Image 1 (cartoon, rainbow, N blue to C red):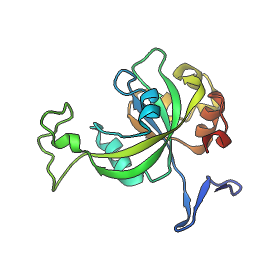
Image 2 (image 1 turned 90 degrees about the horizontal axis):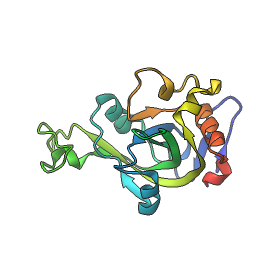
Image 3 (image 1 turned 120 degrees about the vertical axis):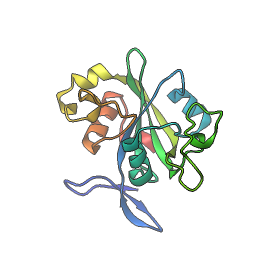
Image 4 (image 1 turned 180 degrees about the horizontal axis):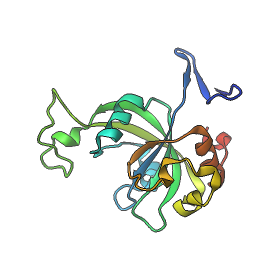
Length: 179
């Protein structure tokens, strides 16, 4: 059950844990590597291969169960938000870092010091309308999103709740359709 306090972020009631704050994220994937449609088919997936320390730290320290994710298709024309996902498993070691046959192999990663982390996400819903980057850039209400900042290339980035809601509206869905 979602409840809202005036001027506060959304809180989700969990019977055994009380109330906790829901966070919002944007995660980028290239559609030829892993599109949102594939996540819908798979139901859930692990988010491996992130090799940026700042993004790794967010997945390890900040991403929590039931946080919401804007699934973004990058390196595509037009780049766009395609759907909504949810964090279904909190940060754990990225096994691809220790697989010598993986393109994400890191010879410095060990079981004792895995170096790289990943989370699992599950599909919630596709947007009725994709939300192209250009429309986000042209929406004055989204001017503070990291996505539209020059030089911002992180594949995992935090999103403010207000920006998340604007993207939902631009995509033609409401919070009720996310349940």
